[in-house]
Image (cartoon, rainbow, N blue to C red; front, side, top):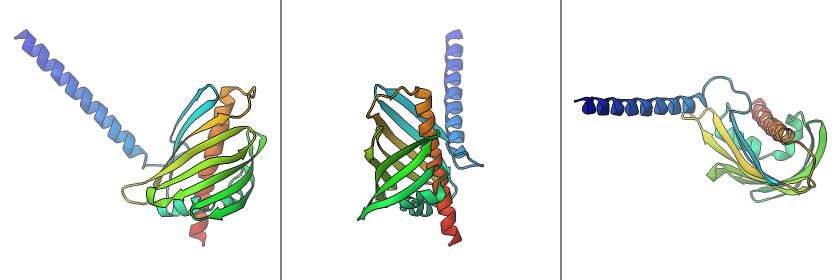
Length: 198
């Protein structure tokens, strides 16, 4: 009798734990679409040897089509970003653009050239470094629409591989990546707002 009772209690405990975990997962998923949001909803930054693995998520309170439209004009970033000094279109063909940027990250000027590949049917934008003295970036932005279609969840995942060994603390490198991502999201939000203005 005692064994059966303990077995029943154990089964009940496992069931309650499962329900608690499932509730937490659902609440976490729901929170992605609720309330005001800072630019970074979540992040994962991990460095092994000379390569940083990066993942950021953010939300833009606009339909995916508007976010993709803002993304498709990276040459306008300087108009909308507080840290980008200039952004110049070097090449555009088919679904690709090559853009040169100069920005100030953590007070330090940086110049680099990126290639953007736009894949709207896959809800992705692929980015890779063409030219940069310090690091090679490669990654992609994945876009997901909220159930009502009014908001867009944006996930960036990629890597940054050091080209030179710099005596820069890891915490500072992570801060630079955060600042760059936040600037990107802010520029996208302003780009979306500019569309509404026109």
